[in-house]
Length: 251
Image (tube, rainbow, N blue to C red):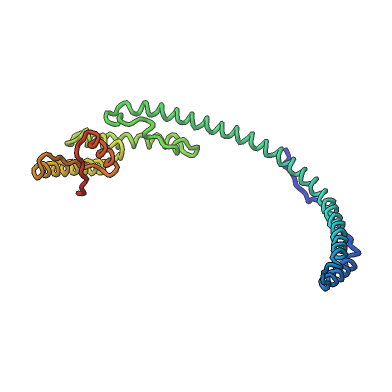
């Protein structure tokens, strides 16, 4: 099949003969000079208007001729432009059709690859105890479905993920607050980060308890709560709804 072989497009430059240019220009300058020196009065106003009307009429004729010549010159270009657009439309329609088929094929390939990886996950996950807390969707990333990503490489990444997850959760399972730590691991997937987050929560609870105790001892009948900024409005509304006095303090 031959591709579009584009050769040079022949162009013949148009020639516009305007033989009266110098003559008309001189007349225009003469008229302009005359008009600029005439002082319009009530006696000559009609003649001045008539003169300007005749001049503008002549200019109108010249402009209409200019437009006719312009359209005449552009006519071959418009015909050429239409032909080029016709060829372009034919090619673009074919391009859209092919691209649509390619996209459908690639989507089918990604769906097939995802199913293969799901089947591998189903076999690989069986021996693990703690790693079952994660699903295939928790592990998979869009890049695993790319054409350049071999299934063997994805399977190795999957195995490494399951091994690391199993070991991490087994370590957390043997620690105090194991349930909280293991649940936190679902979000951060890092042992050290889990421990840090849980310790921070325990510190906030301890601080809350100390504040509560101090308030109860110093101001009987009052109870203190520590809430985050985004919970302040809700806490205030809840207390006021139950006709409980509300006082906001910074810690």
